[in-house]
Length: 117
Length: 110
Image 1 (cartoon, each protein chain N blue to C red):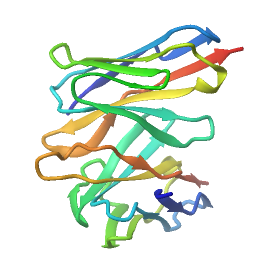
Image 2: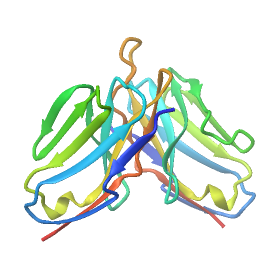
Image 3: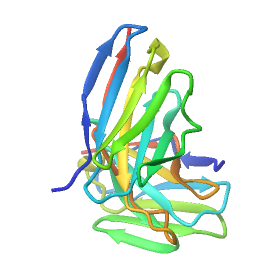
């Protein structure tokens, strides 16, 4: 049963600390997305990758957030330094996109619930 | 960037009722997604459609590309359908990333 996995599932940290969230996409998927969900804003796109290359990170605060895909089985989202306003649920999703059909179903991970005190 | 409007924001209905959730978007798209978020927080993709209608069990999704509008219907609703239903469209400019509606919080009472 292929699924997207995310670790940790929950993270509580203090303001100023570094936070790293990890995502393992479904094997064979070539696109990976990071989304953030808050009560106020709902779901928002932070960044996404295709074939491990970052294609769009315009939704991400550049000064403190960074997203990488060191290999095809791992995507990371890092916040340094973390702030209370970063408290949210962070979802990773993966999908399979083709040049002539980039819009395909996305499969979501269970999310990482981050609380920054 | 595409803008997505969903209605209603909240809906409470009795078991067995026919449910309709609406979604409108501002920029032409090639596909629209309907997602379901369970009370536990998990997000499941229900449909991705680019034209016409799709059906899966008691769920039906329709889209009118010309009017930039989609609807999600639930027939013979059941308490287990209680969830948040979210409409999403490609952000635009060839991006794969999605822009989401605020969601419709559905409660089906026994």
